Every structure is written in C-alpha cells, then in structure tokens.
Amino acid sequence: MITQEEVAYIAKLARIELKQEELEKYRIDLNKILGYIEILKTVDTTGVEPLAQVTGLENIFRSDEAEEQGIADDILQNISETSGRFIRVKKVL
Amino acid sequence: MNYEPVIGLEIHVQLKTRSKMFCASPNNPDETEPNRNICEVCTAQPGSMPVINKEAVHMAILVGLALGCEIPEYSKFDRKNYFYPDLPKGYQISQFDQPICGAGIQVVEYEGKKRPIRITRAHLEEDAGKLIHEGSTTLVDLNRAGVPLLETVTEPDFRTPAEAKIFLQNLRNIVRYLGVSDADMEKGHMRCDANISLRPAGSQDLPPYKIEVKNLNSFKSVEAALNYEIKRQSEMQESGEKLTSQTRGWDDSKGITVEQRTKEQAHDYRYFPEPDLPIMHFIRGDVEKIRAELPELPAQKEERFISEFSLQDRDAGVLVNDKNLAAYFEEVVSELEEWFKEERLEADIAKLAKMAYNWISGDLQALLKIEGIDPQNSRITAENLAELIKMIHQGQVSTTAAKRILEVMFETGGDPSHVAADEGLSQVSDEVAITAVVDKVIAKNANVVADYKGGKKQALGFLVGKIMAEMKGKANPQVASRLLEEKLH
Image 1 (cartoon, each protein chain N blue to C red):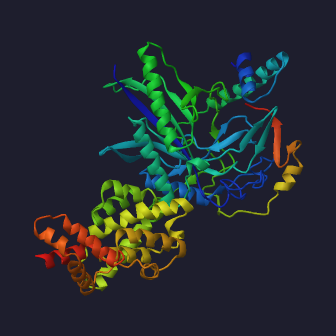
Image 2: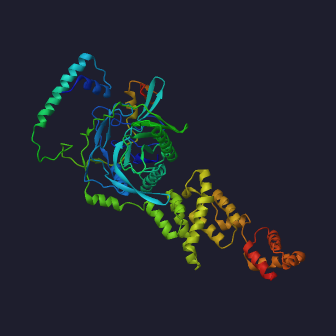
C-alpha cells in the first residue's frame, strides 16, 4: 500500500503541486494501479524470457543525415515566452 | 596515518555525427544562434517519435572495441526520468541495464609502471540543452539537446590523480584517432566527473563513502581537484571527522571544491525501458566487421614509434598525443628514408628520426602554436622539412641558419635550398674553397700561428673565427677547424 508521504514525494519529483485532498485522491488511484500490478504478478511466468518491447521489432535505425531546413522557427512561434531566440522559463536552480 | 586514494571516472564524450541521436536536427556544437538546430522530436512536441541514429551506434561500438569492451548481443534504451527544462520531454533517453558496451580494460602507464584500469561499461544517451540563469528567469537553448553522448564509466581503480589524467588523455586520443569526436574538454566535447575517497594504506575494502567531483573542464583541473580532495579528506580523517557521500563542484579560479546543492533530493530516476525504440541486436559477424575498421590506436602507434624509430618513450608519447603531429612526423621520416635510399647514402634511421622529432616538436611546433594550426595546414610540407633536415645532416647549412630557413619556409612556403640561397644561408663545406681561406688566414696571422705551435692551443679558436669572418659565417665550422689543424701539423 502506498502512503500519502510517497504520493507527495512522487509529486515533488514530477514538480506537481497537490492539495491535501488531492494527495488522498491520488493515493487511492495509485493504489488501484498497483493493485492491478499485484494481479499481474500472480501469473506464472516460469520459463518466459523477460522482454523490453512487445513489437518484436529489432534494429530500426535511421541513417545519419541532418535536415538543415527544419521547423525551428515554427516551434519558437508556438512557445509562450521567449527572449530573442531563447526559450524563457521560470528560474530554476 | 597513510591513506590510499580510490578514484573512479565517468566521462561523457560528444559524438561527431551529422545529426542528433534520435532525430534529423543538425548536430553542430559550433552553432551560435540559440534554438536553430531543433525539431519536433528534440523539443518534445506531442506525438513525435525518436529513431536511433545508426552512425552513433557504429561510433559507440568502435570506441567500445578500442577500449577492449565486450559488445553484447542485445542492447536497449531506457528512460531516465527527471524534470528539468534542459530536456523538455521530462526524461533523458539513456541506457540502464543493457549498455551498448560492456566491461573492458585499458592499461595506464605512469612513472614507468603499467596498471590495468577496468572499464565498467559505456552507454549511449542524449545530451541535454544549455541553460543560462538570468535574474528571475532561466533561458533555454536546445541546440545541444539530443546530441549523441557516449558515457564511459570506470571501476574505482585509479590510485593517483596523475593516472586518472593519463587515462583521460588516452581516451581523448582514442576517440580522436577513431574520428568519432573532437574531444576538446575546454569546448565541452568531453566532460568528466570523478569520484574519490580515501582508505588506510594496505586496505582492500572500498571506503564507506564517496565524494563525487563535478565541473572538471580540463585535464589540469581533473588532477588539481583530485589532489585537493586527497588533502581535504585526509585532513578531515586525521582530525577524526566522519566523511559522508557528497557531490562537490570544482572552483577552478579558487582551486577548491565546494559542496553542491543537488537537483533532486534523492536520485530517483525511475528508469524503465523506452517503449518507442525497438531493441538493438548485434550479430557477431557485424561486430567483427566493425573491429576490422579499427585504425592503428595511439598505444600501438607509440609502441611502433619506439621499436621502428628507436624514439624515447617520452618523445613517442609527445607525438602520439597529437594525431596530426604523429602523421606528419611519419611522413617526414619516410621522405628522409627514401632520399637516403635513392642517393645510396648510409642512413642511420634512429638518428634521422631523432632529428625529425627535435625539429618538429621544437621549432616547428612553436611556430604552429603561434598560428594555432596543424602541421598539415602549414606551408611547410613534410617533403620540404625532410629536405631541410637532410641539408643539416650533410652540413650544407648550420643549425642556426636552419632555424632561420624554417621561419622563412613557414612564412612563404619555399623550398629550403632556394630559401638558403636567397637568404645567403648556405654553408660552404667545399674543402677547396675553405682551404684557400685557411691558407690566407695562416699567412696573415703568423704571430698567432707561432703561439699555437708554441703550445697555446686556444689560438686555434681565434684562427677558426678569422676563417668564419672571412667567409661571412658560411663556412662549415667543423670542416674549417679540421682543415686548419691539418695545415698546422
């Protein structure tokens, strides 16, 4: 079972501010998700190789070619705060 | 009490691909305009998908093989979660439990002693953007976000700061020889973090704490910061203070380390496999094909220079430290060898190589440094330098004159025999010409000759001086001196 303190810690890592009542709401939600994982864990996986991917794809690469005429300016147009060509955000350490 | 340092390194090297690690944005470390090389992938626009750059994988395997690392059959990418504006996705695509390069080994030689350093792993990841903190805001430039990085991690096998520095220099040389990175520490192409702790001499256990030192931007600062930490930590231990694990930053101007506030309270990166990138499967045969591409590596070149040209260890090291200088040296020596063969002259390769080394590492390198260029880009071709060395060897020019000729060649790119003629710097070794002057000087200085014959040996120097003056300094002094002595006996 996940505690309110753990929810508060996860929120802090994700830079999300949660109110007291929200802490409880997400504690219950997260516990439901973890409860589902508990059900998954009951499946017998003896002899099953672990995998990191379900697509079955391997070695999907792109060749090393640079696209010089990109969409940089369009992206900057959509950013709420800029300073020259810099993206401006609230001060971080 | 005597303490022994336990030191490990983590080194990030920017790979010199054309495009970024997971998108087609240009990878250009010299871009001056902020946010010029960005696209939907490296700015984390919703719905955008990464695709692995094949060349970055190829380069990483080359480095791994050069470091003696195992290349696994399978490798995958993982997400390292952290929330910071230098990577707008909220995570860095990195590698956690299946890095592209596994354990390896590199030998480090310090004060004539060779010691193996174990490499834990090397993995591929994407670089983060640059942040500029300005007043109450932070400015973000994402040109660097997504640039391929290869992070090499060593075991805590270094016992002196000097060994750590040598390892770093060797790694820099290797990636430069492989052509996968410019690895200029001052420019941030290569970045290093070190961890260091002390244990009582003779102990084999790892100390119960670890100090991580960041912000090491040059080879010199790596060595200086580690020496500073050895002093600081041993003083603390002597005074009975307990050391705990910490991250500290090196302040280059003050020459001290200071404790750093950490970004995350706990390093809880919640790694999980990157679902958007299929795994990589390396077939043995393909890895062996890449191994066959490996050029001669710096350590091999150094050994060959010592065995083939009888260079001193130190001299070979100086050349190998600079790939371009080493290549130029080899060209000069091979030109010399060819010449001597063509003219059926007896050539002592060790002696010629030593001369070539002295001229290249001394006068030539001084000139190159002033201009800030490589020997390949200078006006002095290897062929012309070889000719100059041959002229010195055969006594056609004096060493002093040769220095002047080299300067003129560096300025104008001329051929040394023409420069010598134009500048009037050719040395006369022609015995008939010198003998004529010797006779003249003897006739004019009967008193001095009498002194010499009477036992005043230093009178010979005076007479040689007269011959040199008569010939305006162009006589070969050895020949003049020998001819004079023969006449006087």
